[in-house]
Length: 104
Image 1: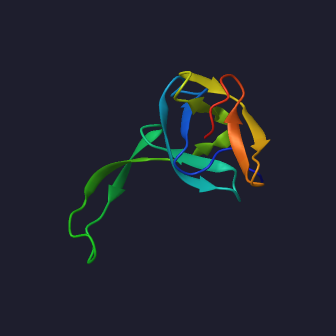
Image 2: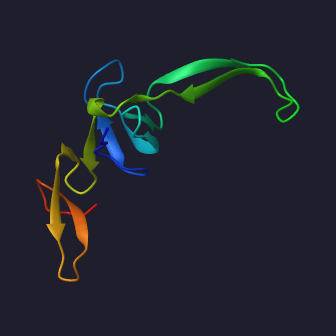
């Protein structure tokens, strides 16, 4: 599966219980088509104390969501946008905001 966002991109959730929230992509899982976004889809996990981590308890962490539920968020025009590609003079291919032309 191909995922349209990359790690450290700023995205906005467009559907689901966290609709309207923005956050940074923590992890991309292209095999399943899912991503983890900071501050989105928070779940509680019950962890037992172990040798590596002596502290146990209830830990809150981000769970993966499908990449189709998010859109790239442009920090310049403060809006969600699709990605356009542009080839520079040196031959590098960069991602560009379709609305304002800012590079990501």
